[in-house]
Every structure is written in C-alpha cells, then in structure tokens.
Length: 129
Image 1 (cartoon, helix red, strand yellow):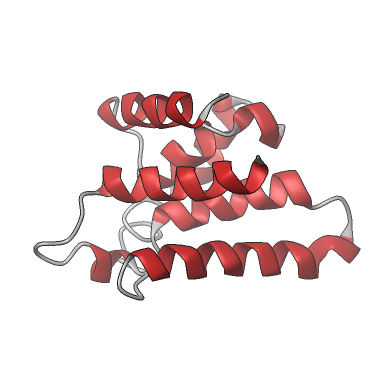
Image 2: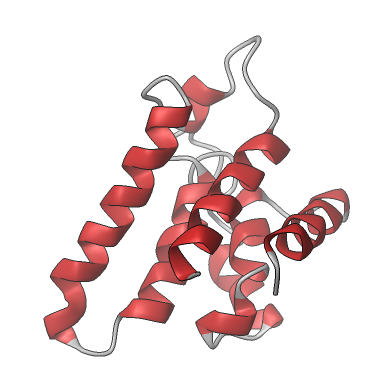
C-alpha cells in the first residue's frame, strides 16, 4: 500500500468516527497481521489520550501496536521494539514542539487530529519502506 493510500484510508476512517489510534492501526493491517475488527477493538480505548485522559496521543499508541505486531517475534525482540517505538515518539515530538501528550497537542491553536494521524502514518510508512 502506498503512503497516499494509507493517508486516504485514514481520512475515510476518521470521517466514519474512528479514533486516532484506530485510524493508525487500521491502515497497517496489511503488514501487522491483524484484521480490521481486531485492530479496531484493540485500539478502541486509546482515543483522546488513553480513554479521554489527555495522556499520550492515540496516534502513538496505535503506532506502538503496529510496531509490536510487525517487529516482535519473541522476548528477545523487546528491547529493539521499544527502541523503535521511542524513535517514533521522538520523531513525532520533533515535529510537534516536543509534545506527545494529547492534552498538550490539542490546546487552542494546535493541529487537528487528522494532521497528527497523517504525521504518524507517514512516520510508520517510511520506517517500513
């Protein structure tokens, strides 16, 4: 799937009411081994910063799930998976004035969620290329 196809799918999912974490995870089911139903269910509670608490951005929790599904084979992979997720968080924070928490990202005048979704989809897609 191309990056533009992933972004278009994420936009369509968002318009249907899926949360940011779901939008990220659902556009990578072609590589994660998850089907749409399972990916949607696993990520359902991560929108608006973990169940609406405003904590870590749901796009990053979605990315973490995708990374775990694509990079983890056994316990020996745990350090490299964590390193990869940390790099994604750092890249995202670099784009967003050092922020990764939903409540910080969503303060007045900040980007809409769809922009954040597109950023993380792009980061993940580029890492898989």
